[in-house]
Length: 458
View 1 (cartoon, one colour):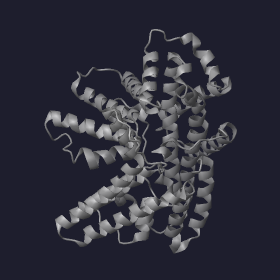
View 2: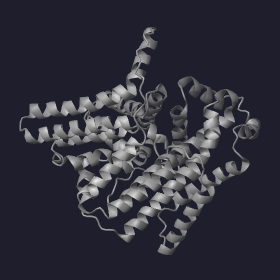
View 3: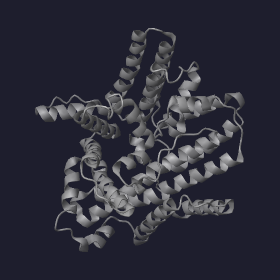
View 4: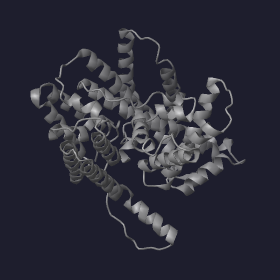
């Protein structure tokens, strides 16, 4: 069983102590901790990370040692095919077989009885980006297998990102370590705030969201609309909470991870949203798929196709389900609509609100268990029989207490207030008081049965 958020924090503190006294073996301590962290979930699947590490390391060395572009390209193809082969086999094989059988109306029962390896989409994309960058000579091939293995398996961002580039992080593993008070304090702020968003906000919202999305036959339009709104906040706090913790943990190791979220629900357009949400994934698809397809430097219809391919595959990256594909396609459609529909001048508030509503609508597909249930939710939300009068009784039906429901609303309001005031200068004393309040908030209001992070499943 993979660590929950509290266990993850305790594990990190133990690793940090070892790291601080580890001397020249600090990289090995981090590597060992990373492998232990992954093996705590399912030890057999460490073989996949080792295979990906060794193949991509050797392919990188092969590309570096060969002046022949044909040979270098073969190494690149070997890396890409190996990584995609692992990803498709373990994540998409059953989905593709099921889809083909549904279309052809046959039933051969050719399925793989495997558990989806946690974080597989993250580390395969990370290693593929390394091979592509080495091939294009953007970065030199890494000569030290240990450092490269740490790049692939680095535990703070192994299972839920951000998706790092080798050119940004590899050299940081080799830097000398100095224990700096400012790094510890900054890291502690991010860790506690990320933990707060996860165990206080996201897990509390799940108390309302999960019963409704998992029992669609028992609820009506108003409940679905509110649950969809709550899920949008839940997934943001859950995912960005993990990212904050990963960045904070790394900062204490003197390692800077890239920013993965930038107040996405303040975006004024869908294109801006994707510059603020899961930034590392957006940039990955831009640099390694969208631009190689031709980007926007092609004929209009080809550009439309490039956008849709990018977003459909982005949806598929999230999961082997048609709901994720529709979710990705919707965002592609939103972007095309932004480009081709007449632009209406609106105040910033209404632009933010419109973007938020479009994103929230798409989240219904992301959270729904299947397309049939997504259609039930959407049709009842937009039905004349909205049944607002049943909202209170259905809130009670979920099992969430009135206190937790009211607290959820207050926490959402406080989240928006904090992000709206992010530019306001804060003296050290105020930061310290804020840190203490967040810590007590976690202790007093954290959900005891904290769940694994949502993006661990991707």
